[in-house]
Structures are given as structure tokens and as C-alpha cells.
Amino acid sequence: MTATGTFGLSSEARNLHWLLSNLVEEVPGLRSVAVVSSDGLLLLSSDPEQNTARPASAARQESPRGSSADLATIVSGIGSLTIGAARLMDGGGVKQTMVAMEGACVFIMSISDGSLLGVQAEADCDMSVVAYHMGLFVGRAGHVLTPELRSELRQSLEGSL
Image: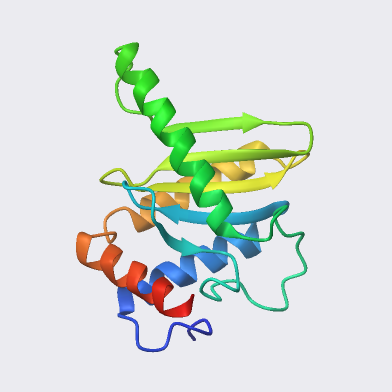
């Protein structure tokens, strides 16, 4: 069974949509999820208005502006800052980043070739559960997120805007 809005996509793209839907459904407290390319472009989103990867029946609080595009911008910026910091400190590659705020948390994990998975969650979420499920997504998505698939995902988002 495929998510609404995945008709006409390759099986790899449909599988990524399914993985994202599964992440959103299984992890309590998630507000928004975005997969961002190395150049900061949104590739995959939990925002139903972007790509409908998230079921319409999901009763979760939306991000403040209601858009995974906002999360993608934040993820890209924080990702760039942490990569720069790691270079300055000779710390090696950045694996994950977390920002804890009074009312929310943002988690970022490297996927592959500079792509990033970003999650906005409730402040009281179980951070270990969020990180665990993000790790599962990264492990499953990393080897299939090829340049061709990134291009297909980007084109499908542009078609839905």
C-alpha cells in the first residue's frame, strides 16, 4: 500500500515515503520531519501539503508555521553550522545534532552525501526514542538515497507546490 501522492514514483521513492510515514506514526511527540539535500533543498516531508507522506488522519500538532519547508531551512542552517564547527575543531564528520528549547526540540542526523534528516519534536519527547527511530530511518534510507532518487524526490515536491 502506498501513501497518497506517491503514484508515479519509483519503488525506492515510495519506500522512502513509507519510511517517513512510519517514523511519524511510531514516534510520539513528533511535530514535523524533513529530509534535506546537501544544498538545502527539501526532498521529503511529513507535511501533508508538501507530499502527503503523512496520513490525513494523523492527529499531531503542526509546526508553528505548519510547514516542513520551515524545518528544512532550519535543518540546513544548523547542519551547515555544525559541519563548520566540526572542521574548525578537527572533530571529524557530524553524526547528529540536537537543540533543546523550552517548547520544542530539533534533532538532525546525517544521512548520506550531505543529506540530512531533521525532526521537530515536543519539548517533553523521549529523546532516546526519537534518536533511535531517526537512526533506523538513516540506516534504511542512506543506501538508497542516490543522486537519481534525490532528483526524483525534488521533482515530485516541485510538482506538488
